[in-house]
Length: 285
Image (tube, rainbow, N blue to C red):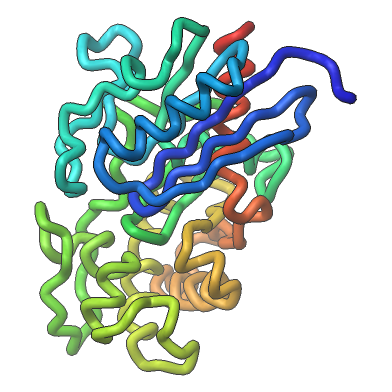
């Protein structure tokens, strides 16, 4: 059996939550459940943590969430579109008096992809999740890029594709990138779950266009080496990375001699939990 401390990692996503227990880098147990109410979801995770009794905990949460340890609201969910979660104190609900580190689910996934996934060896890249929302974890010179808050580039404003009359689904901004191209946006455009939409459906044309415009903005602003895409929509459709890259190249029109590559995440659904385990290891150290 592997030796070393027991580390617990929690990925709290907008649709589902995954908790894992690992020793020596090997996941030995996991819990997966739907993200419903704070009491129900966090209560179930806390009960499992009580059974596991880990030595340290990493929390990778959907945002917006206060991730600066100096912030009085550190660990609290901020103005999220997810009903009932605003103001929830994740650390108070889950920490169980062990060392704890917290960041966003996309930053954690970026760290994991950088260590053992699609961005190994790169110092400057972006991890983008395309699912219930669109979130971005930005790594610059090998470190996550944060400021007063974490990046919220999923809500950047992009011009609509000519002829696209879709109003958007973001409750704050309507037709921001998330409002035009997230899973709920695809569902609202088509009237059916994004997972059931055929790859040949025309609905993907404005979705890919919006994503390509957002990614072009990332390349131009950050000069990143690679954009890694994960999340439910991207994981289910590996072809979408190439489609976005092709459209982005058309939009850039040769302006960048080497535009950043767009690739699927290598760790799939385990990127977030693996990143949360990295947080737990850092908290213990």
